[in-house]
Image (cartoon, rainbow, N blue to C red; front, side, top):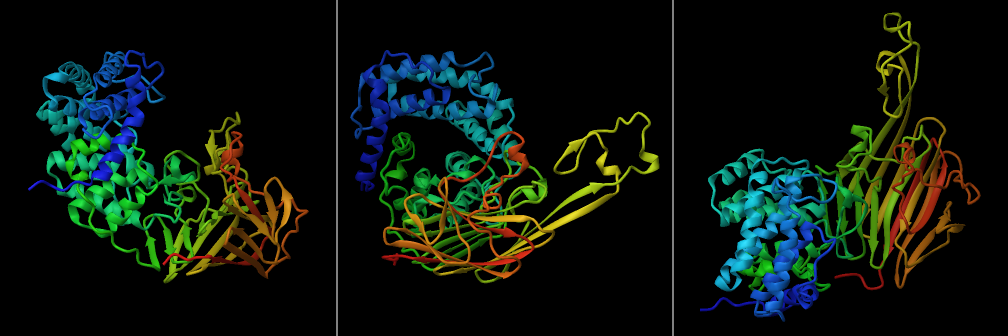
Length: 572
């Protein structure tokens, strides 16, 4: 009995591939000038998949194969004598070349299965793979996810060109252990790299090596990601340690992984996520090749499980809490790496946003808190404690110092003391050898997540310094009840304000428990976001864009902020 197929899904995947493959197939002899090696390999794979698929408009097209050969010649020319590809800022990079080789090897399987009619394509693909094999076998990496991308390339090479040395090298990398934590997050906590690198690589390795533990890692990550899906169809990234921490990431790239595991395990929650990932249409040109290489993807999805609301999740390893209800979706975050490492760096979680709130089309994208304390930047919690169900406390203590004269035994007649960094400033002053007088500043934020929003209590301690709470709303609405202060900014004091988009709204009301009155709209020196000297010293910023509402004053101060969502038609 024939296995039933989801014809609509397969046709959608074919249309996505055709949109990418049709232009080069229309001009098969046109040289792909300026195209990167990774894009060249992906085009070849897509062209061969379109040629192979009965659902593609390019099925059996000789022009598609001619275009593939043109791209293959360009790809071979981009290969250096080492077998690696020259492109981008990662020079002679084994993992960056592995991305290309993974597509080359998949294209090889698709072409080889077609038989002699694609013999020339198969031969060139084998030549490119063979030339790269040695460098990938011995090469190194420089990010956590690179290990799994490189391993996937080695496994694919072994799949088509068996060599035990390739498997031995894969086992050497895998012996380090997959970097997935107790909550199901990879160490980089990045949606981009989970969707595009770690999950697909580990799925491939699980298949080639027969490793059920690798499949289990992917399933755990996908299960956790279910609680990170936001109402706008994106995946939460505020906790990421990579470049996606400051930008939204769509759910769509997770589609093949949710779909495959839903089909193989029968999980209705994964089926629901797969349907949601495809809700905006299928635009991934690589998906057609995946259906040919992994036929299980073409089977019908199991019945989706209904989403249970309200839903709560606290990821202890990332210090991120989310509460979803029919009215509001609220995220509280206290997992920055900056307090521990005292620096802004690629590979660290640096985003100072500590709260988001979704109320249908009304979205509060970011709540941040600036303090004018030695230019050390905005509040980033060093600790997050769960006080009770849906109640959290975020805390950060900043310290700066004034330094005393060096002890007698540490003084030098020539005054040439070693350069040292004291956490905010570097100088030839041998800071660690000096007695210090410390100045401290402590911020405590308590968040009580409700079904219709959140209650915040913000305590700003230490010396008298200016502070500003910045609430950045997604464009599309206008703050009502706040005073405009120019350049897409508003000031809120103790009166309520409402941010309304259509019939959805978020209401904000602030009050002072202790301390001075709040700053008025004339205090532009207070009502601003300061990214801190790590950004400003190089002329940079991590400031948000959108409609920004400020509440400000001078500490010490205790502030309460009530955030309430109202939906015209709550999700049920």
